[in-house]
Length: 298
Image (cartoon, rainbow, N blue to C red):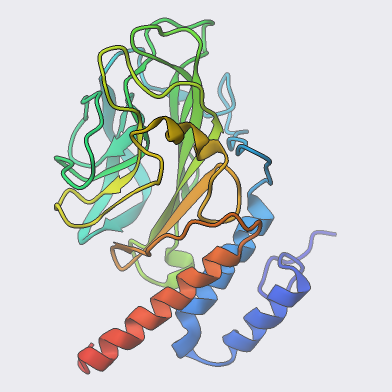
């Protein structure tokens, strides 16, 4: 018999269920911490474990399991706008669509073809980049290999997959295999536009295109010269170690939660499990309490 997936059900381990129940009855003061706990429990239930890399999410149909929509083979181009199944609020701007760029990122204003990454901040438009570098998909090793795929597995999830993509100007192996996952958090937070984005790194073998002199960059930039984050190791040979590092205790996974338009400050963690996500709730609770102390009208 299928078990219920409520906070009282068996979806969460016993100790986490107990904490959830306590906070559930303590009132709205602890809602942000509860959200962090819910995210942690969700990651335990839905995201497969990994050792020295993260398996890509699949099973979405299509020839490779990453959906049926792919970006045409190209160098330095992309497609869009592509509709999101939910709205996202990214630093004060609400978006219902996005652009998939071959060079390892998504943007929100237009296709972005720049192939050499530049340090954040300073992006010309809002960008979320699991692997901004000179990707080249023009010469596949097989018919459906080496493509960029995008899909909405459900109304709360968008997945973009760079499946064994090559590097300019040697498009055959070595290749990189990585993924971006967007998830709607409104059902957990009650705020339209709250979401999370997740980078998953399965296999990384190259860092730099033939005409670039800078290794790949991973992170995000709001495009306002103020709000950004660069994952440690970016723009150096150490970026290949993203298959081993994490901010949520899962090797090869970097996850960021966005509440009220702002990304919760990420942490780097080598401890397995969901505990870093508890800090997300605690950080959000503290920031809201601090705002109340500074401005009683908030």
